[in-house]
Amino acid sequence: MKEQIVAATDENSGKRIDIANALSIVRPQLGDRAGVALYRLLRLVALEDIIGRGAGATAYVAGKKLGQNLGITKLEDFLALCQAISIGVVQVPVLTPNRIYVDVYECVTCSGMQPVGRTLCQFEAGLVAGVVQAITGKVTKAKEMTCIGGLGHDSCGVEVLM
Ligand SMILES: [Zn+2]
Image (cartoon, protein in one colour):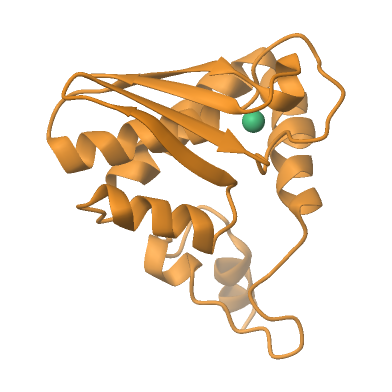
């Protein structure tokens, strides 16, 4: 009995958590919505507290791996996902074979913040890079060029080069 309790509480044991399992949400009273505050506190305060300024690079890699593994095969499906999970109001003003530019208005990570003098939305940039790489099969690299809460722009602009 004691051994079972130890095994169940050891965070190094147990199964890997895949996307489908993480998105199995059963909250009869609260549903599948939580405040933007929860995500921001995790991404901008807690993560930066532990990793420091490297949090941005970590967030980019996390977003890119996730974007590659979502099973998205069409740009329209990605835009629908962004709307479904309220990442922001997403527009794609540039779409060429070698370059894509994405504007995120009302960005979940940063919209409304007092500018802090650096870009903040590396997770979103990585996510876009990963999804575009999955769709096109080309190696991508994305960079956040403008940022609402980081630098005071109107949108968080992500440039993806292939
Ligand atoms: Zn942003």
